Image (cartoon, rainbow, N blue to C red; front, side, top):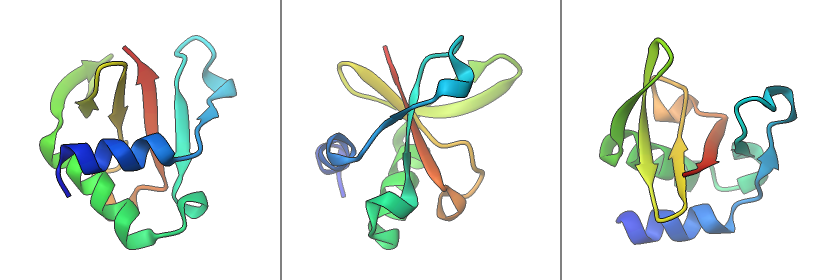
Length: 89
């Protein structure tokens, strides 16, 4: 998968607003709702390997950006990612 493929798949995912973190507005997409475990892992792997590191308080995450959003996972290993996060830029 290349970046356009990944962004296309991300645009098709079902996104949920993270209600418990209203002060840090973002959404998330669940792996179990996506349905294809292998492709989901491939997307998470791409985010982790092709994104750019950025500090978030004391932690550093890797963010993949498009024109309007940034995407990230919180897991060390993409295969463990249950959710992909998305926030508006």
